[in-house]
Amino acid sequence: MSPFRVLVVCTGNLYRSTLAECLLRHQLIEHRHVIHVSSAGTRAVAGVPAAAAVTSFLAGRGLRPCGVGSRRLTADMVENADLVLGAAREHREAAVRLSPVRALSRAFTFREFARLARSEDAVGTLDPAARFAALVQGAAARRGAVSARMGEVDVMDPLGAPPPQVQQCLVQIEEAVERIAALVRPGRHPSSAAAGPAEAGTWP
Image (tube, rainbow, N blue to C red):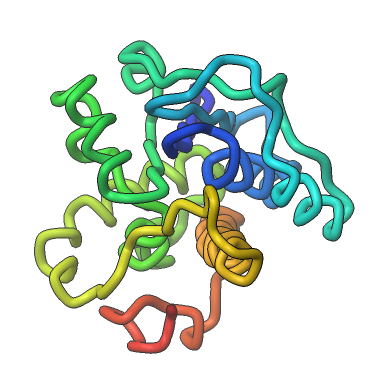
């Protein structure tokens, strides 16, 4: 099966999408040959390094920023992605505008996808790329029925925010990534306590 490609998007590709890319790569490092993760920003200036807060957050987990700096989102990036994860609805919508046919059923926010995807979507599927594809299909089919009850699905822009709010933003991303990665890894599913509101009513 071809590699499964995840594109993570925010505005500047300095905070939210950079952190999500690195955390998801780390969480799925054993599947790096079949799951490829990249990131970009809708207004990014090419080549700018990750924000200091992100570098510090990653260092606290023994990790470093991925890639060679920020990238500007393009239609080709969206066309080549099997899943687009936006930090907020504006980023999801930007991807859809660039590639309406390709992205419409494959673009979500981080928190939206973490809440909509279910382990049963990939029951019996061991290949991680195939599992990811099944999770996307399940989440897309479920979106219309439950999205109105999910609550906030955006992660705020931490640029210029006070340190406590920046930390809250980064933790929200980490929580969403951990849930998504757990669903992708065969045999490792998030507990019901971590499920989304449509499933258990307790996932943030």
